[in-house]
Image (cartoon, rainbow, N blue to C red; front, side):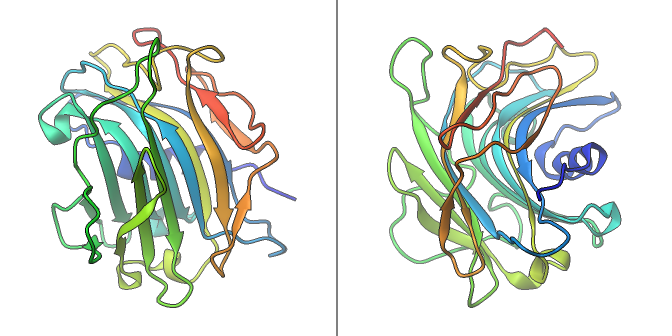
Length: 270
């Protein structure tokens, strides 16, 4: 039987890698996510997730951040938290612009070490001709009234090396672009993982809350995650055809149905 994930631990690990907002003002974090935690009896273990996300753009200020991510983390014991995330992100604090970026990062709480995109040792690019690199601008983005722009993102553990691989596809199949070496991690290297996916928004308390997803609440014209698949230890895909536990407060998230869900809402309402 699946467990309900701890809200406190979830917010902790998502804050570690999701928010780059700093400064003297307290920050507010809001999520609209689904998640999976391995059962205590070890009957089911997953080591990755793939999702199709429609991506959007917003004119945000420093002190605001929004996007959609896949998070892989261990564990509920916050001093030992290991986290990887990948997805799309509008984050003027990190990129000094308000464009939509493909983003990935890792964080190991025990060593207080983290790495955003290609900015420090950690993420290793693979050979080949994949046109995208972490941190790159996603253009065009979706319009709520016209064409939607999709990305396919996968984070999964290689069964042979134990490295954590990042896959990305722009309006097409996700292909490997690089990996985080197994040696970077402690609890992620040898334990089943917790998997969370959906939308997030962070902001400083003196700023208005930013939009999440498309900026429109479900169901009509809301942002979505679709074609959801878990991956087991052997790398086999398991389409998600049932609902999962979720966390949602200010911004709504719908149930998982037929491998997809919608999430998000307008800004300045939280």
